[in-house]
Length: 137
Image 1: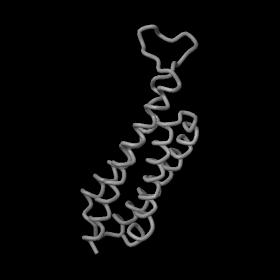
Image 2: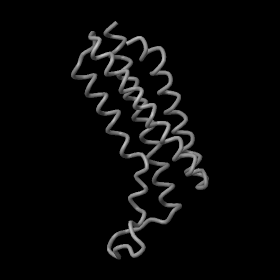
Image 3: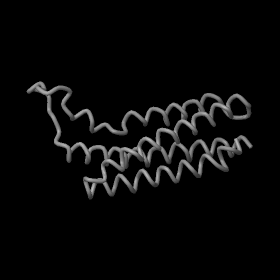
Image 4: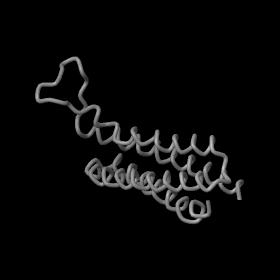
């Protein structure tokens, strides 16, 4: 529990701030989309570290299992929404005419807005987990 509170929680907050800032820059400057993709990859890794820390705290005991697992699942459930703009790209050379296809700048904007929303939601999930862990100490 102390590993989460002392190391993982501050790192998650920093990674959500970086995700939010890079997403905002991407929203203003489309060419930063490549940087956003790298930050999203780093955010996946940070979420993995967060989940592994949660699992170790659950196995060690002392935290409410159901609510901790619930917030852990919420942290994981946010991840598929990162990079959601890729759903607007065509799958083949001859896309289905009834399927809407986004332009590359539109994909970057959708990714940026989704990343900003996910950054805020992930920070809230991390905060709630920190509150749970502080209550368990």
